[in-house]
Length: 250
Image 1 (cartoon, rainbow, N blue to C red):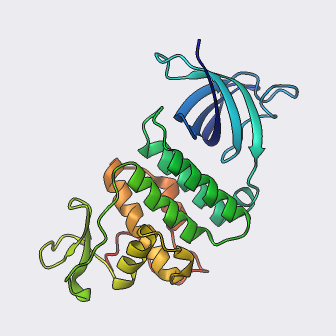
Image 2 (image 1 turned 90 degrees about the vertical axis):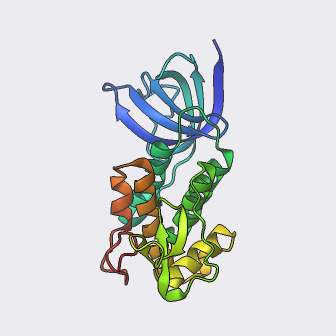
């Protein structure tokens, strides 16, 4: 019976019983894995006391290709990110990243670059960096890795007619696509710069937040429904200076 050993991030978890858990893990070399950790919450188990959301660890599992739920035999905790558990905003951004991975990745398909982007975002959030720019960079990596990255070139489109069309897969001229989502030039610039590898931390915070909201609306079009945690993470709060989310229809 083949054994899997890999680094992983916990993206979902449920209590199976008082001592056991069912989890969904995003593994670096093996993609999304669903498994049962029997006795995970027992004091002397081989699961570091249980598998928590957004924790990073080394997982050992017995894999049977014909099973949807694999048998986990060991979990060694490598990193526990405290800030996403202690602060509401960072918690929602962390859970939104997990939700996107869960909804947009098929099982057992490796995405090492996306895994590294996820870990990098969690580590930087833990160090105290603002989560929204980190989330934007992760979001664009996810869309690229899953084959859904939009086009952000504006070409000769006048600034007053910039729009985003989910069906067309990117920025369009609103005069030709009157049902597309109107967008500000600053939002288009933030998306284009971040997609090109420029640090989003150097961009205006409002532009980064609007870019995240637009990508969230686009992701909802891709998956069809849901993404409630993503919506909660991007809702305006008193400390923010931008308007109601939704796809730049302002």
